[in-house]
Image 1 (spheres, one colour):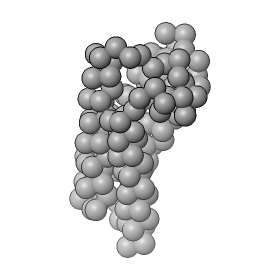
Image 2 (image 1 turned 90 degrees about the vertical axis):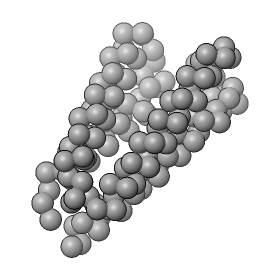
Image 3 (image 1 turned 60 degrees about the horizontal axis):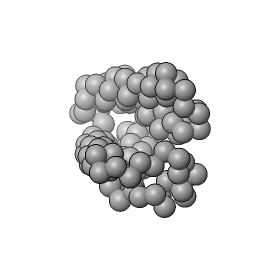
Length: 130
C-alpha cells in the first residue's frame, strides 16, 4: 500500500509540473523567453505563436491525463507503459532535432531531460506490481 501512495504522489507532482509547463506555453511572449534566457528563440510571427499555444494545450492535456492516472497507477499500468514509450519518443525527437539543427544543448536540455525522466518513471511504475 505504501508503494502505491509513493507512486501516486510522484505522478501527481510530475503531472502538475507538466500542466504548469503547458500553461506557460499558453501565455508565453518575448518577456517569458527573456526570463528563461532564450530570447533569441522567440519568433513574433503569428504562426509560431499559434503553434506554441497549441503545443501548450497538448501539454496541459497530457498533464491532466497523467494526473488521472496518478489516482490509480495500478489500474492504469498498461497506459503508463504506453505513456513511457510516448515520452521516450518525444525525448528522442527533441534530442535528434536539437542536434540536427545545431542548437545549443541549453535550449532543449530541460525539456529533453524532463521527458526522458518521465518515460523512465512511467516504465518503472508500469512494471511494478503492488
